[in-house]
Length: 285
Image 1: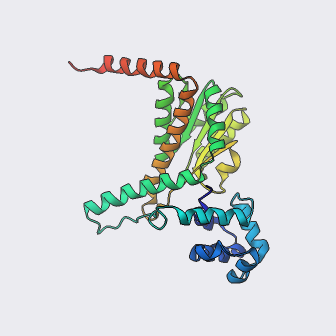
Image 2: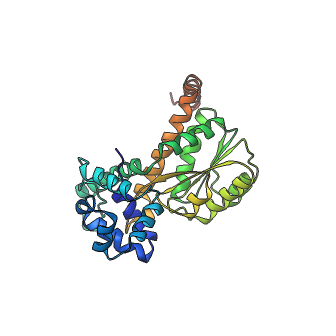
Image 3: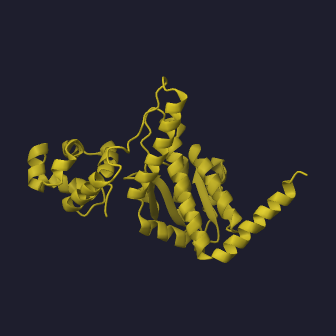
C-alpha cells in the first residue's frame, strides 16, 4: 500500500513556497481529518487556494491530492505510526538512553527511506551498474566513506570501481569515463559542490549518472539520470552524518546485492577468491 505522505510533506517543508506552507503545516497537524476532506475543504481550513494544494502535491512527485490522502491514510494505519520519530541526542542523556536513541534513529532512517525509495529507480541503477565497464563513486566527508565502502564491495565481485578522496582526482576520473561507465554521486544534501562537479563532468563524458541524496528536489536529483532517495532527520548533530550515512550504506548494499544477483555464481566465486586471498596474505600463525 502507498505510504510516506506525511514524510514527503515534512521533507518538502524545507524548500516549500510561502503560498503552500499553510497547507503543509495544517496537514501535519490534522492528518486524520485531512484524509476525509476534499481539496476545497482543505483550502478553506488552511487559508490557501485549491491551486496551491494541487501544486504542492505535484511538487512532491504525486499525481494529485487523492494520492496524498491515500499515502497519509497508510501512514496512520502503520503499526509504528506515532512511534517512529527522530530522537534528538541531549548532552544530559545517560549511556543507556544514548544507545537507545542512536539505534532508534538508525531504524527510523531505514524505515522512512523504504517509503520514498523508488524500486524502479533501483532496478534501473542495478541494470546500469551491472553493464558498466567501470563505476566511479564520488563523495565528500562522511559520504566519501560510503563511496569507499561501495568501491570495496564492487571490487570484490570483479567490478572495476574507484572512490577517490581527492577532489582533483575525482574530476580527473570523471572526465575519463565513457558511455560504457557509471558515475555515482553520494551527497545527502544533494548540494555538495565537488560531487556535483564530478557528476556533471561524468554526464558530459557520456556516463550514466546516479545520485544518492535526500528525498525531494535538490541539485543532484535534477542533474543525475537516476535519483535514489534516502531519509534522515538529524538536527543539532547533523554534522556527524550518522543516520544519513546508515541510509546511504543501505542503498549501496541494495545496489551491490542487485548487481551480484545478476551473475550469482560468478559473484560468489569472486567473493570467495578475494576472501581467501586476503586471509592467506594476512593470516597470522
